[in-house]
Image (cartoon, rainbow, N blue to C red; front, side):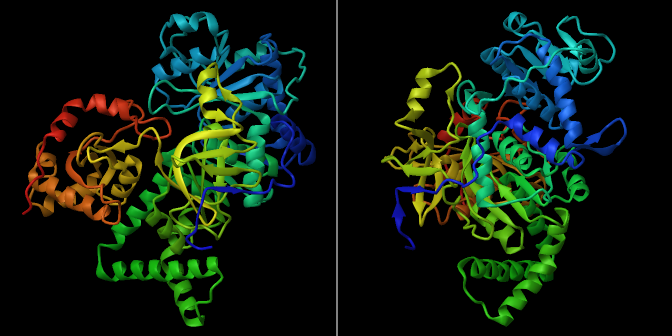
Length: 612
């Protein structure tokens, strides 16, 4: 079967797919294991982590549900959570769902303009924020005056109180609702549970409607592929507004009854890994790429460490591939591979807490060489593919079966096929109910029971391979088609480049805007005899020539059309805060093109810099 191309794969449904609701799972855990730890979070006031049991969590949810009930909201009313990860995020999620309300998550670092768009489009009635200042940052917007009924701030206001009478602190709001009669209403698994807004790389964000069944069926399918237990420990650091983290990092452990530790922030991730010592961790490719670059950079400093890393990677990969494919390596080769992997990989595994048994990469395509690096050093890595419109996961490898460059076979109960254009079509119990208030767009992507994902891919031996986005495919003046994402991913394998955007629609060759890594740029500039801090150093012909040569090396095995003739190097990283990245760290291409319009125009007419 090796090497055979296919157009369709499907998997049998899991035997125990959940048909309940999310609040019913919490009630079940509170009854079955009332004193077991459910969630752990850092308390800034006390300066330490504290835990809450399943029974205590159920009480907290009931208290917030009673307060929500006192607001006399109609079933299906929207409750927006503009909060960082934590126990209150989960408590309000369950409280709203238990009343038949609909949760609308916002990323905690969402720009005010994006937050306003989501609150207005969803007609949110209740908004929960961390601080009053967060709500005040939206200004006196006419669109929010009539729709929003109540704003709840977790933290007590400091200094001047907000003039908005709808704004109350959590403590005051809960006190005012004591004695309210609570009548749970969220008992229909097919009812709308949440509206999750997509990142919106182009145009305004779209609200994806998902039911309890959508969310729990996917969580159960992921569990069927890689089972867990209540002895597992999850560390949550990706935003719960991201459907991947919410389903696999929050609802899946709820099914198991496993505790979730909420990291303080990405900045504290290393410390929190050592505290939590998770057995299961969700990661995005950028974290693993930074790990590879960091380890490689340190190893390259001396010949002995360089040799040791390269030997460990070669032997470690041979060991992993042999075990995956059921081949024997021989006693001596196995022993050497285990020894080298232990010497080099043990400190890395220890940095993850020392107990990690499953690392799930998702949210974006993981570069093949980064996946090989992690697997070679003994990290228990699996990769999958999914999208918000399918309640996160659609495919995924079982532990030990990962093949870098692929994202695995369909999960149990799910089916994939390819359209003639190469577009990936999905049929699964996780496929959305539709787009909120956008029936025409819903009809475009949901046809004959299939979700048209807009992603491009191929199928090899039952595994899905992602090749790009249908709408972002560029057509060169030669008629050749290029996926900018694939070219960008290849370029970013070189640690010199931190971010990259490929240009070339209607051109004969490609050009690139690239943000350089500060440390790598300093080294390159010094090697070229340039002052790395000089304003014009990045535009120097020698720097551009060196960058183009490195890009050519990164694209050596790519398609013939992927030839880059011009590059503009940039010093300042693109961020969510400056509007150039989505909250899930995807490029906002239209915004980037507008922001760098002059640079892009100059690139199109720029000749290649001369070779030395």
